Image (cartoon, rainbow, N blue to C red; front, side, top):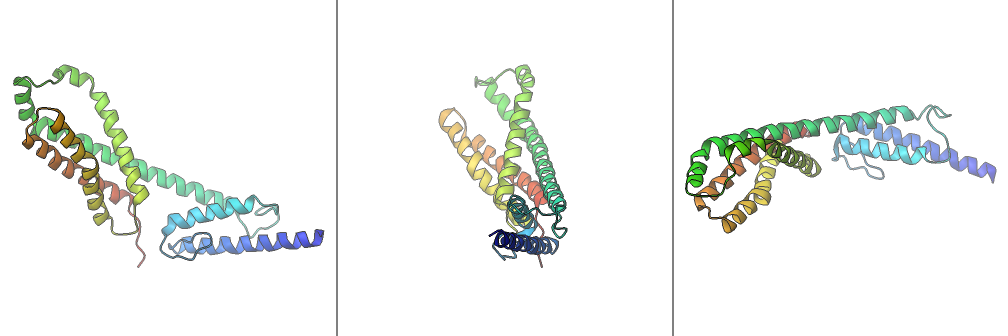
Length: 229
């Protein structure tokens, strides 16, 4: 029984080493493989995730690997690969979110402070309820927090749904969908609740479409995936 157990352990170890080599080759070739699959269209991220999953499963078995008796399994390299991949992904995501935040904040100033500034002044003079300008300046930090939170979630949602297709088309598509999902319903609700002219509501929608499309293009450019020939 003991001999049989050692034979099974040896078979598991050999299989793990072969799986590691297969996954490593897939990552190096830029095609990626998942555990139990041979699909070549999943990209580097999927291959690395599969490698990490396989490594975790194997390292949890009874047979010691890596520097503990099987030099064919460089477990430290697996950990380093996973850590570097996650770090790079987080940095790219935060960079994309920050770029989207800058676009959103600048666009907000250009739209509401410049383009629609006269419209808001006329509304204030006609008795529409706005906060005093000095109070608005004091509460600028609320707008900054709101814009950053929106930008971070904006980039995260795009990253989760990103496909291995040209980034330009994906960016435009995501900008349009984000406008229909957030700007248009909010503008229509504001129009129904408050005494707003329809032209102002349309201006909000147009400005939102342009702004979110620019944000989506920026995020897509930062997070774009390479396309295998």
